[in-house]
Length: 217
Image (cartoon, rainbow, N blue to C red):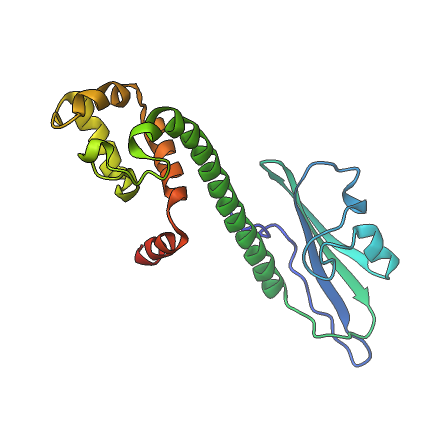
């Protein structure tokens, strides 16, 4: 659903003497109807620093208001108009809409990235605690040790490698070397534990290796 689909179409007023300026400002996911007019709006000439009250004090009038329900409150869209000679080129409604949609899309992308980073940090923190208490003695502080000189260093394994190895220990598919020592630990690990430990081990890799991994994706 397009954010601006219910906004009344703007007409660009032109004459020999004056040209009405218009600008579109918005506030996303805002819950207080009583405070919206004193809250800085985003976009347009509001630029996250001017409220409806500020705009009115500068000679702008509210031409149109659109309010839509959102997950965390309401989305407010204000069309402001100023009847005086324009100091900058008037922008069409379509371009204003495109700008706002683009900014909202960029904001959502940033929020997704932040959430992913926070999730990775939580996983790494949980994985560190489990790794130190369960794995470090045999696999080394940096996960680069061959346990009993028989297994591959954990730091060289992909998540899939680690998941398959744990599975093989659990079902008895892998029974060579010191597998009997590893089996009880493998049986105690959940799928979440494995992912958390792997996330922590990834954080131990040198920056150069991380960069190469990113470039190879």
